[in-house]
Length: 312
Image (cartoon, rainbow, N blue to C red; front, side, top):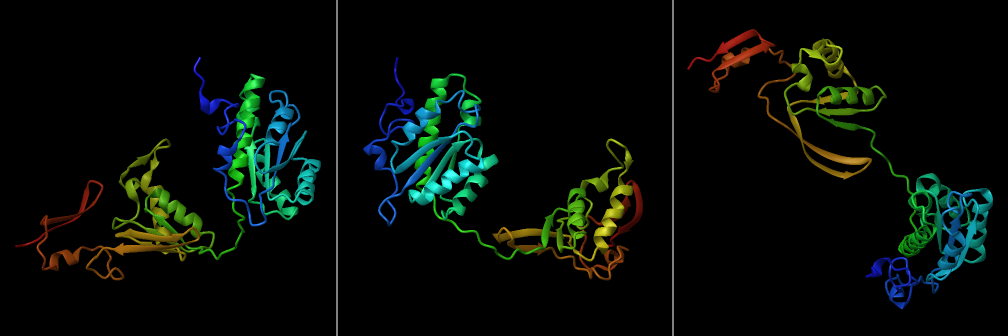
């Protein structure tokens, strides 16, 4: 049977295999003190991991990986004694990187990061391998589960060498929000945020907000009157002190980053004074520009409120 070298744990330099000089050549340069020092910790998670994975075998394998100076197992790495083991080893062995193979990072990555930080190691010089959800819980064959756990530990050790000592920083965040689209969803979002006391810019490309809902008679599934729901919200947006309504406008450019975006908005020309306009339509009758189409109609549903025919 043909053997796949990429999955052969005995093939040097390949994923899951016993690392050799070929692996060493792919690793980062040692730190300025001479060499990275990695601690690897395998969790039994009670019997969740140990009943399927040969934890002792994984520990022996991890101890042979490049730059690994200490490899241990613990029944519950997330417990206080487990965390204390990591903290003590960071100081006793002068560890520069830490790898924990246990459950999902979603559950305890923060736990182990804080343990590293308490011991004086930058919390981002930590890597977690999930050998519970990704191995023991989904693999029945103990030998295969053990080999897969080795590969994940190997990958975690390789990856942690590329981690950088990051630092958390606090930066000022602009509180105003931009809501694009003045349909019912945009109106509701703008009102919700504005009611919390924050400034909102509501941008709508049409001349009025309301969107498709303003064209409906009734709404599903209650068959409530569409206008009865939408009109009060439209009026509230127009008079809300924290909402700046930008109709007949479109977003042209966005730059910056999260918490400090800069947005360029193009407002299309209206050729009327929006502060004085009440929608009477008198400007159509006196406009010297030829209108196409010539008939201008103001309608509410199927009812014509006003019709103007431009004389040539």
